[in-house]
Image (cartoon, helix red, strand yellow):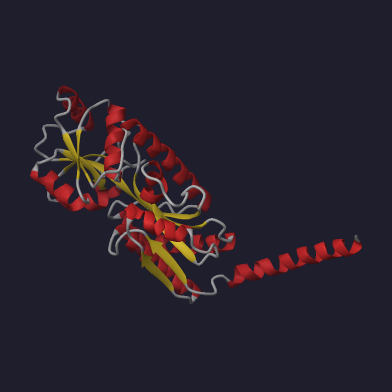
Length: 322
């Protein structure tokens, strides 16, 4: 009995000595950030900025690995099944972590196979119309849609995309009917919006800014808790009379479930400092980007809320992947 007690005390003492050493030694080898989307996109840009900071702070290389396919599922699965040692991170987002579980069978569980690290950025959605449409406010748009049921068409970046889900949520809240016209990405959708082949769409502030400045599209409302400085005259959805409509394309770092807390804490701290730097922060804010940069717990709560919200929208709209 005494021997067992001694061994237990010795083990506890060694644990208190070894744990701080592990925390101080992290990171001790290269880090990789898996991005489930192509190089050059928003997620890739964010990941490379984070990787640069992690490399500088640790003296270890941090590399970005683009693993595309399956609307983000291929990269997410690769990250979820990686060793939970703190050296594999995943640039997750709305698609693989909140939407796909409701649309298709996955080889991983986004709710159980990842731990949240930091919510890096949200690119708020914006309701934009072709200027030829005879409305100039959200209320006028709803009235017009009710007077012409099923005659308005909206573009989206694809079936199950952020723009598609937001438009369906808008239809459900406003009680209107519109025709969905899905495209293969944002560029052709915006092209047809500008040409007048479709009347409206929900797109990110960042991607719509050039078209708004050129007066090729007209913004009616932004889906953010507050107005964005770059479009200060554009009301929020709440101000326009549609309470509860907030959101956009978001990205953040996650890690495989079981990742040591000290690793996640270190990555959170260094990433926050990278994006909080004055020049970097101002560059993103000038494009209408929001930088939450909160705690892992706050990011986990955000993901859970997004998963619940879009699951309900998908169920009510009976959305299926084609």
